[in-house]
Length: 472
Image (cartoon, rainbow, N blue to C red; front, side, top):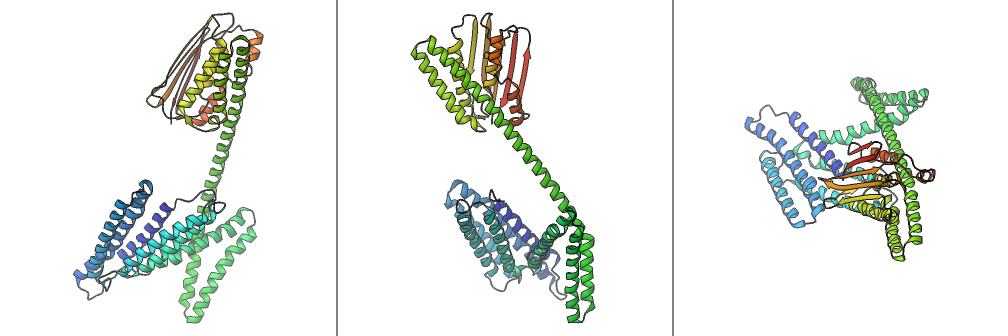
């Protein structure tokens, strides 16, 4: 509630839907026709009590949930204004036709309709002012804004129910204006003063708050009963207390336990996500120094053996790689084209290092025509790096074959390299700083569960990797 704004459009819709549902149900079951009323008038009046609220609710839904969001997305006011006027006129016509002809209202022009329109416009203006005044960066977080906006929604709903009294009865106003707040206050009292104390082992304190509230309720009913000299009022109080103790309190206790269970699950999942993010950050920190180390060694060797043109080209590619690692590598998702560019720079630097080796055969095929979408950074390189680490021998015939392509929203990589079990001790020492394939496997499990395939097959002469992943 502190870090982001609530989805108030959905909250507004649910609150108003509840208000109209109360109106509809009270009109459906609460109306009792007079004994001597004309049957046709009774039927028409009964139908009118149902049609008018339904028409108003449909108009509210179309304007609030369809037209206003559409205006916010395309910023074209003229068609939205025309549709709003049309919906308003249709709902007004229905209100006049059924409300006046049925006798629900005494004037041909329904004042309750005008009052509802004024309230709705006033609420939109109030909501806009609150958003401008109480949201970051004006204040630190969204907590004050969310609480104030919720109270504003409730206040305007109560005022709206006042306006709807001509076509219903005070029942919906009593339900939303007194019963619902009473239940909320009772729930807060029970949760923080009774349930929490009991959970913390403060049984005596919990009982004091529980039975203290019961005593206050009985005392209030006793006072009213004594003033009116009516014992039935006190008996009604006993019935209310029995209802609270036998039904409301056990139900609240079950809800509180379920709520605490959900909060615990959310806390556990949050911890797991944070651990996963920490693991991924650690894996990335392992990757970066290795690439820099190899690239710097390559440039150093090249500067000794080659001319300045190749060295400058290598330095430029290293600069691109360093920019990638400093910026894109810290992002959760990057365009797949940037990952492929990084791969090409890496391959160019490796060919600068090994290109003159006569016993090495390198076949690189990169088809990026259909490669679009996003991918987590540094997922392709480890497979290629592994091939250069383990597939090249200074004495034996070596080969590396790389094939990268994109098909139907997924990226596919095949890497085949030669295997040289008998390497010198110095070569093995240099490879100990490599990250291997375990890290990338862990990253894939964290980031792309059930959205990737990884097959690794090896024999005495070849090491084969097939990797495919669904692009976002």
